Image 1: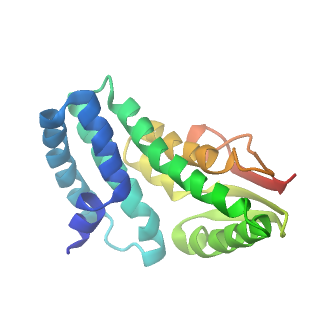
Image 2: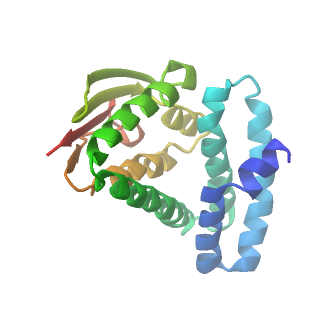
Image 3: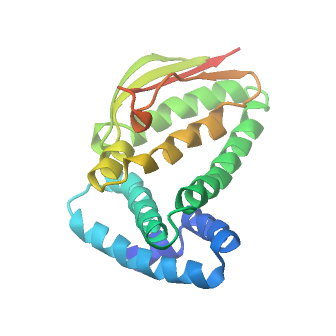
Length: 203
């Protein structure tokens, strides 16, 4: 399977957004938009050939979303953002449901904080295009300020900074309703802030 097919044809998030598009604009219009988006994605992948594997873990998602958004905006600008928001929310809520199951387990909250810290360190560091300062990382609290983010960087570079907020909103769906854990955030880079501040704390 080539990279384009792996990202676009078999990407879970893109296929969920596609389902929302079918419900909104119909199957025929969706197929037309998806054919155009596939070509846009191929151009984006060719445009940024020197990305590291850690960066690609994020840019594969970013570029596929940009491609779909551009294609939808070209033919259906009145509902393009709505489709992107609703589709992305579906998988983000599924992630939140998975986290909820974890934190309800005995010692689940401790496991959650340890896994969250490890995930941020391995997948959201400088090698992946992020810049951050961690203020607390314990078994009951994680607090971090993100000052550079590839989601904001590439959406802006490709002329659609307004798309970035769908990725920011994922955090609300995933973390804001967990039993016994409080999630607080005041701003994000994707919505005009100077940083993305994360604060997860055990109640």
